[in-house]
Image 1 (cartoon, helix red, strand yellow):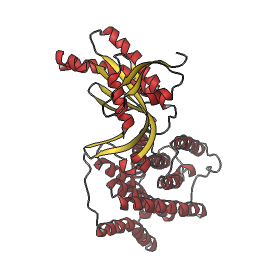
Image 2 (cartoon, one colour; image 1 turned 45 degrees about the horizontal axis):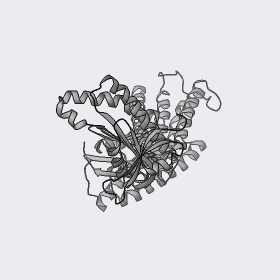
Image 3 (tube, helix red, strand yellow; image 1 turned 60 degrees about the vertical axis):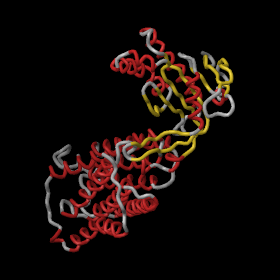
Image 4 (cartoon, one colour; image 1 turned 180 degrees about the horizontal axis):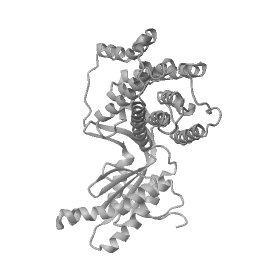
Length: 453
């Protein structure tokens, strides 16, 4: 579904802020008028409400995490960790519903919600900063999952300090001490996202701001609510509303690069030293003219089923695009592969080795030729709704494409920049080659093998 464009006015911003503050007004009202804070104890409703909230948060954790790792964006990764914190501990809280997992109240499961919301506030705050460190962000995710497992075990086995069978129905010193920094962190995160939104308004950013505000308000309501009363149900609904808002924002975004509005500047307009691999089938046009489209499709799928895993799974390449018979793969697009030239060279040789097996079974099929070039390129987000892609552009990419066009069938050709990064490689010069768009000929080499092969 394409992203809709909204025109934001000061009146709309003020109205949005007013709506977001209404839950706090309602909470204050029911606390001042206890007769309004009606009691409703319904265990199935509680279980399914919390479980649904946890499920929505888990879905968001997965989708944002996948986008973060695919694009190497630390901000989106921390957003994912915030959702994961909430999802895991809310799931544990759902199990605290009497007669679901345990017959008696359990402090560990009951306290899971404030702990999860508090941890999420730390990650929300970190996501609002200009941060790097996708690698240690991954380690944090593993640590978070381990913490959830330990918390669940300590709750079930009633280890100290989670051995109590009940918790206070109203705020005590511990919860208050936890709530104050949590609300402050959500407030700072929302304010920083608001500054970004003001510079480049987008629905995705607005959804995140609203979610952080609601999560902070949920923590306030959680501290002061009376058990099973209206104020107690309010913080459950606030948590659900926060995640529903983000899910709605995600659904309205165009399906390509849904979280692009959250990407850091370096993700959408950064520069990387990387290697680019192009591959296509020599003689593909002639083959297509002489065969039925279904045969051409079968041929392409047969090739791609064996060559794509070689460059992606074995050597860590990112498939930028596949157009017809042409394949473009990047290495070090996320900035986490300093050995990008070696990876690209290995991938090129492995691609040709895998393709040769297919070629032996189908002698009449065209053969792949591969070109690799290394250098500085711009990592950027191109297009708008209906056609948005995260790609690399620059002379390095153009030269890689030109080198591929000069490679012999069944061979891998590399440019001088890649050769300089592979002193151990065994190559054979193809001589100076005139490349379209280059004033001077470029020395191109056929890659025969890497050192030790």
